[in-house]
Length: 66
Image (cartoon, rainbow, N blue to C red; front, side, top):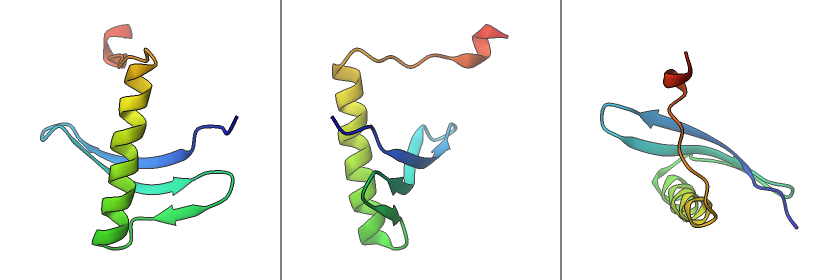
């Protein structure tokens, strides 16, 4: 199995959006340097998040633990 990639994501909580900034896996490192690369990274991010949800992962509000 291949481990999950590392991604840096900018989250805008007011707009409830997220933008992929970087992607790194065992073989490649990519940055969202232009519209095309950002679109490709965001498409991967959407697919990855859908897969995580389908696998049963859930979002947790960490502020409720304080």
